[in-house]
Image (tube, rainbow, N blue to C red; front, side, top):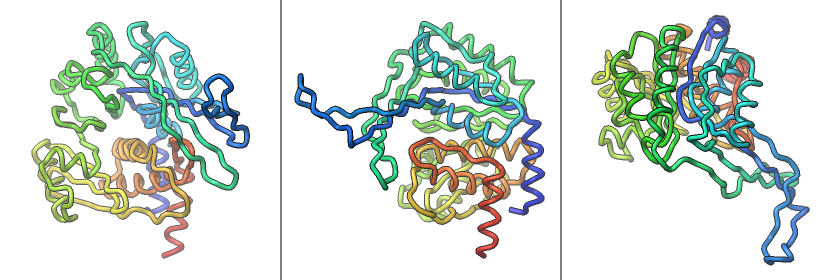
Length: 341
């Protein structure tokens, strides 16, 4: 990407106000020292001794972390946590981030705090290795009164922000923030500002906003065979963009990123070369954050894709965490890539 143009987009990002609506969780990392392994006298089972615990916002919070790293002017998280220890940690983490305004983030006794417990084995000379997670989730429908409060917050923010990101992270429909009632409000008035949606269960049933998905989710939504060619993926994405009247973005792992506009224009950028050990956790969220920021800052389709590809390349090389990339890091990687060419 042209350095002057990147600087211009970064300068505009500093004046943006963005809302992140969705399922915020607490990523709690338990760093394990294998040299301190024991056997429990009582059970005979291995004991993994934790030498450090760190916590950060995850899921929709990973998108927010990336917006903070980009220097976005003001960021409004819209979601909930429980009145529990994890909720206290999550709120403290959110409020400690530069530019984050948490007045629309709800703490309620009617929900537990969505938590990913991530044990990390730290072996000398090896990248951190994540063991089986311990998750805490809500398995019952989100109470209507909680949804009503979140919908009110979203309505209040609609005219105050430059773009909105929707992040649906839950496994069971209607148990998180992005419920049918919340989506109905968006369907009534999508407006002109960018609204970018991503969902781990796929975007079927979402109103016609900007869709961001991976190739597997595109196949599930359009009926495209999983082993389709790049040309077939282009056509499917372009067709979906035309039907929705909104852009569609598709991540394709080592095959890069593509974006399709309703007028049939399709752009694709390659994935950046791998530069060592990688951890793909958080890569998709960095793409969502960078695409939205770029579009809200007036970037072209090609520029938005290039920015997202650079950012995700930086993030996958940050091990043992759901990472984030700043404009300075993105500019540095862009310059190195240009020099290599």
